[in-house]
Length: 238
Image (cartoon, rainbow, N blue to C red; front, side, top):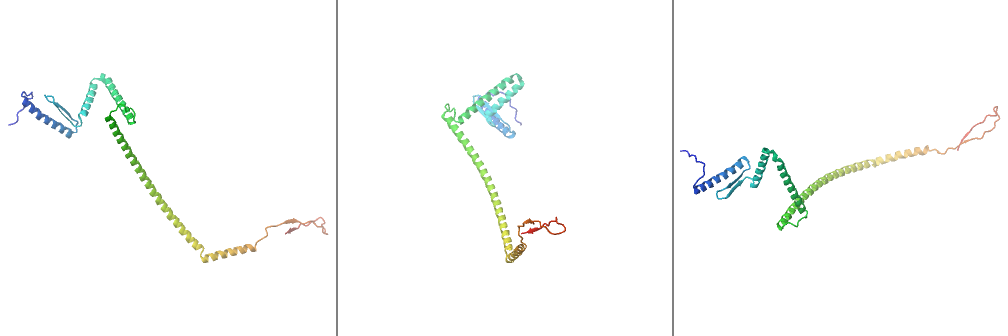
């Protein structure tokens, strides 16, 4: 025989009512958890027993679920009642203003200002926050320095390779120069060069001329010829 349907109504017997509550509450919690895992849904479940006990389940956190619920409810209310949109944006502006004031005050506290109203616990938390921030800055600084050192090492290796290539080229040039000097100043080559130089020097001495030449006009002399007015022009070389 199949299981009969249960009439959904309040159970009069308190004992039976408590047992049913405990069983159904556990099943409801289980189903809510399965729903959040299987469907990737954000689930929040709140249960108050008849005795005033609280039972809750949240896939993320109950506060996040409630804030999201209130936000969605306000947006739905705005869609249904456009006249309240001004009040909604006024509240949003006020929330942003409070957040800005909090961040400005926290920034001043990080700089060491306006610390008079803080308790020992607040000062300790502020100190821990500063130490964490300082640690992060040091880690970033070390990372940047390591990258710069690595880049400098790469450049140094490149310069070293270029220097070695230049030394090889210089050595090759010196070897070629030494071979040319050896060929040029060999015994047969030296005698031939001296002979050519001696012949050239002798030719220059044989045909050497006095670079100084003086030109003078001779005085005209009267000759007893048929042309008494004729003059002879003579050149004398000294």
